[in-house]
Length: 497
Image 1 (cartoon, one colour):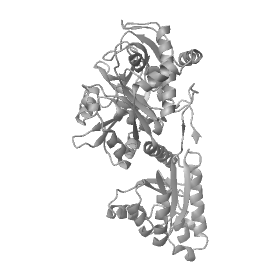
Image 2 (tube, one colour; image 1 turned 60 degrees about the horizontal axis):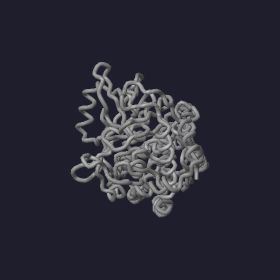
Image 3 (cartoon, helix red, strand yellow; image 1 turned 90 degrees about the vertical axis):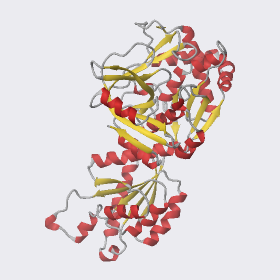
Image 4 (spheres, one colour; image 1 turned 30 degrees about the vertical axis):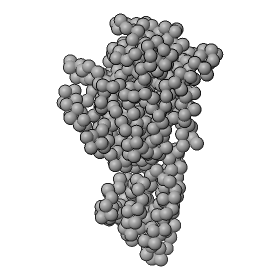
């Protein structure tokens, strides 16, 4: 088990929460070469294996478990490798293109193995020394030579052409960044096939886009949906939380948030002590609940009887869910399981992921407010987030503390997971910018989202792809990584550009 803390943290500042403990993805590495070269060129095999060792060293600091399968240099060794790869329960495989290799070293592997394979061609020399060039030197630098052959054989085997990393073995930041990207993608794939996503209640009845077949989530993503009951939380809220614990949790919450005076919204007030106490009790109950059910995320919506304990608890999970989401347990309101998975993908990719929808457009400055009420990922907030007491949660039952902030200024990525008429999932992805400026003081998140070429054109193109009402909002530009994840999951995707 490895503990990752304070992610995402692009500016390097220390955050006051701690990441959940999570297992590392398992990545397999095998090199390829040509068996006929070894008797012809003494020392070449050893030099190529040293290249593979250097590549393995690049993976060591990337929070992955690496299994080295050595070299495949003929058809027999390729067939022998297949059962080993299957038995290793891998999340991703790097095929290290050490020199020219016939596609017999690859054909049966790409045909048989369903785990994503990435072809890595990292040439040791930036260029050959032509005045001293030799066949040995050429073979030592022939990493790219077999890529077309391997790609063509993948197609002949009925498989997509694998992703490719092309570069140099030494001093190549671009290639190193691609290696790191695929390790983060492996973390997503690993997390999805092991995740337990809690589900309480039901979507708001009128929001047809959010209804989801839990079995299909398992079929396409691998996650298991744990159907939970609201009274489990209420039991822990009422019976398993001590006054001393509540006091400590109140202090912890206040260390994360500012509590300013109200501004212009008449339904907002300065955080009331009673609302803070309810939020703290609900947060403690939620943590106990997540631990007892062994959950990795939660989607919830439950009305409850007016003024009942159930309604009070379910309406006041916002603060606790925000803290848990920021620690690696993605959670969202309105019982939106698909968006909960979008948040999960962004979290494991290391880019945050906050529950979002579109708010009013600013046609003067050409941006749209992107945000939502309810729980959010405060690890990607611009500045210190705010808690306000809200006299009512608009469109929902209850009242209490609301979380307000905007996403870090700079590049952002959106992911909507929608369902089609055929019952399949679809990723709708876009990149934009979070720009500086004030946001409404309404106890909700709101980010000034700028999208090219202009807000009208972008929204028109986004809507035409059939997204859901909600989406996940993360920091940085990562549409390419998310589309690779969609491809590995065999899910349709589109990047709205």
